[in-house]
Image 1: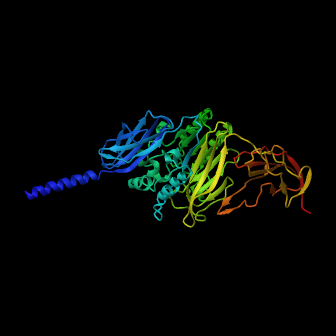
Image 2: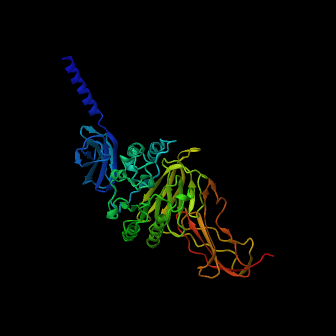
Length: 529
């Protein structure tokens, strides 16, 4: 009899232990948000029930069911519920439920319709793959970086402050390692992803893994045969485009063809003012030249042409190189922004082959994230990018603003400069310096941010003998190489004696607006006496 009672008690104990072990392993995270719908996903170690309890107050009151699917050939399940019939730009509360296990209370806010004129933020960060020497770095970026920074700017919940999170790849160290997704990516960011939709693109470390495509429900509006490899998502007046720059996909003709067609449609859409593209690999990298790809250069060319034809500014976020860089195309309102590193080991200055490219204004070997604040103002829409730095392993920074730029859709050009004391003169070759008038603009906030100088042997400037483009700052290898250059003069080299030349100059402000070219000046050269 005693033995029977013991067996019963042990059976009850193990049954209770089994029940109590049933857990939500990956907290709910948000996907594919629209003004009237959103997808909620989570992972458990048991059960097929996928239920979301939700409503416009913490009392909830509504429920929606969805689907569950195997993730790694065990009892573990990923659950997905599609909430529909929501109201635009409205805060909702929710809990997820599988069996008797119910999550804590979370909240999110639906996107606005196109045409709404409220400011919003987009967070961009990448390359959070674990660095074993600093394994908690991504957790630090989220918990000590993103969340308190947004809280300091607006005391409301993060769901009220942030529209979406974009991640240009390398979410984990090895995409085929199942445990890394839970432990290294979702768990450190659960207090962010449970309230704000996340939209990644694959990096090389994802290794085209099935886990990546099972864990995310990205917009299926790209090429059908390559679903979720490229896609787009609109939020108010901004179109976010996701691309796949990895081996095996960067050479697929459908991707660039799809992008070209999408940009044509975007050009005709009056509700879209800005295009933000994201892909993993850089076209140029000041910290790590071997990481560059020609594919991204082709993407940049399409975006540049789009901005030139439409007047709608664009940018591309990227990663791969573990450090921050911000550059801009010379002829177009297009930004190049490396938003790394959110966890991966820093690519320190001098560690790899690098190069000082004209396009880049600043490169920093650091951890951090980028916040894009979009103002959909009807008069003149704009966006502002801010780099929030967490420093590096040698110098800690506590959410310091280390770089910022604002771009307006409408062009207010600086006043056309004048070349001084050149016309119809004879100039000695050695030490020849072009001089122009000071920078002026109708915009009182505008500053002199760049200058371009050209010298040619004919007035069409099709055959240039000198072409210099310099910006007001150039942070490379921790030094500002443009310090003390006011951009109003330029040394000219490699001219021939007894030759007639033509010169011109133009100025650019910090909003990427170029002035018109100056009046052409002509001069003849001679050898120095």
